[in-house]
Image 1 (cartoon, rainbow, N blue to C red):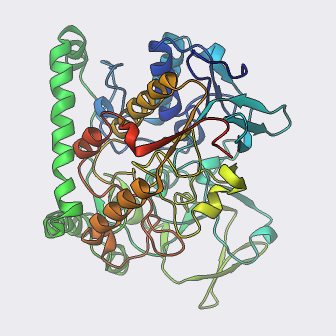
Image 2: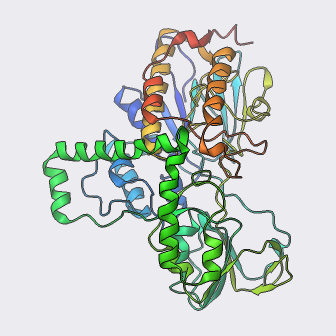
Image 3: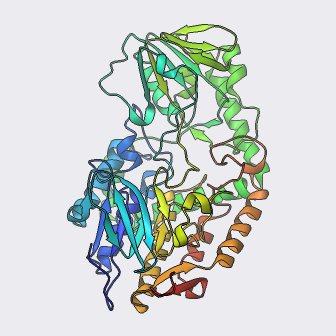
Length: 495
């Protein structure tokens, strides 16, 4: 990256090439920015859609809304996109917008430090030279660090063991005895697929999930042709999806009693498809629906109902050389263990070390829980903008919509910086505090505060993940940048 100069567009480093990073890069290019790079630790773009290649991997948001508003895809194969198709969409965006020359693959960021003397960020690269830029935009997402359970003896297992987000495709599970630990959003997709191959499967469930039918089907050829030949219909279809999904926000935030309608549907589906009374007793949750992520699937209950699938609800005591031992002393002898234990969603930007003004790290600033103004800016970390930051996750709509709102806001920040050459913008602490207080107040009456333990909560029990309202409210709140929310620091002031 070039050194700081006045009277020009700021230089930008984007960390990550998932939906957020690519959206940021595309909008920079559209606005005439040339001095920007994307740093990617892997060898390809795609983020979570590159990493999660397990059998059955698919999206739980409708295809036409899990894509950029400015880049429609008319020939989606299904109502809910599959992993390979979503990844292909992202790769085509890279090609169309000529982003390849801006991407540096195999550049894993280990940290970033703000230089108060020069108002620039120095980004540290594992096994590489540091890079310097005026602005850093993080687009690492919330689902990029697999969560590995702390189970005694995991290293002692002599068979096959891997996390679903790091699926080992060299392993043929045909005829094998397999243990799956976890029954979350990933497991609900890959378990039905692997039950077709394995000899037996022991499914270790800590708590049951609420599972609703997935209204999915392939698009017909005439439907794809209609989307392409009548762009207006494609847009109308997208808007219909948006408002259908958005209406569910009422149930999650203000009127959680409405969720009982979904709970009734889930119970009916379970009773209809699971004939084993012992299994049925354990697959219907005892917590309020919506407190944890609601899952959608058409083949989860039929998979559990199969006789060669053993649903284990006894807690795991340890893992030994040949299998899993539960608290009751029973040994489950298996050839392979698959961890479907999700992600460390509340550990934002981990494992990078981000150091801001006066040597304060982001971990120190967030000692009492992650927070950011509009989920994007953090006091003490000038010119650092976070995409998919604290409290911007959704349970009812598409995160791509939220990302587009965030990217538009960051573009507004960059425009403001152009007016103050050499400056760095640091959100005022009182603005951040007021915003965060409003967020937490909004969450108090939500279903996520109904008492269950979920990945929405950090180690202190604070919900640092979810947005407590409608996405159109967030869209409106990020439509422009109020420079009064920020202190603009000259290099001399930064110290």
